[in-house]
Length: 288
Image 1 (cartoon, one colour):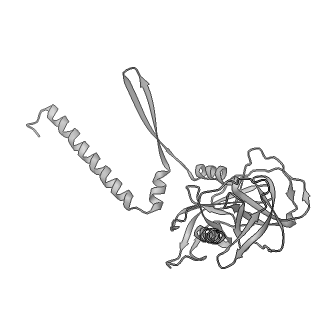
Image 2 (cartoon, helix red, strand yellow):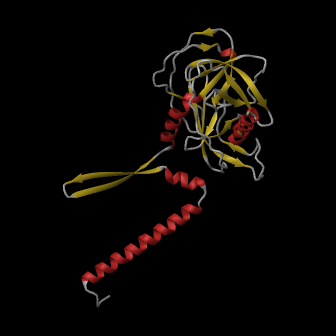
Image 3 (tube, helix red, strand yellow):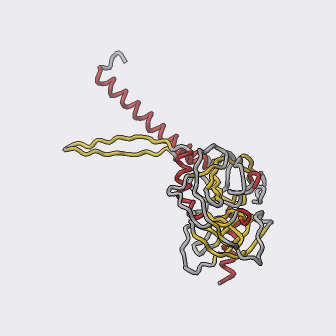
């Protein structure tokens, strides 16, 4: 080193720095490829925004990193999924509505989400509420938990995105944990769907549950705290720390990407979305 002049020392330093950065990049990419989905999802929450400012003869590039919190993710999920939530009632007399009063969210507990306009709309008396579900087909199929009491001989009312529809039970499978209702879609409404994700649910995964009742939307944040070692998927395969109540039982359970991974059940139970997808695929094939 004593025989090197200043220029050579600088060049040597730059060369070592370059080699080190390239090696670090290769190792990082290799580790990401081998890492479980949870790690990559967490990393993907860090969004890199590149801002270019062009001046005569010069382009300046500034990179900033924005960390998305669970609160940010939940807000996006609520906006995307809320129009697909359904509240199921017995078909009886309508009564006047009340507006929504929002409260602050607590991690792990059902919370009220502020409806932007908090507009009143027609609703059913509380005694006639049956449960929560969500839209799973553009034509108006609504899925809910099989623990929600439904009678195939009875007509129900379903409120979706502040509109009222009549509906009847299509199937109720207690072994699979879900029931389906078909909306009488006389106006040919194209219902908004939420994307499914049937990838395996993993231990420690962050999950979100949405629900609703007469005049409010609720949300809860939790994690998957139990995963069965069995290779056979069942109702007992997964458990979460979500605190379930009558607003979110039968509602969607979502991952941090806003995709439905199952139906939320009582006591943290989950109906894997694969069960619903399999039924819908088989019923579609049979109808052809």
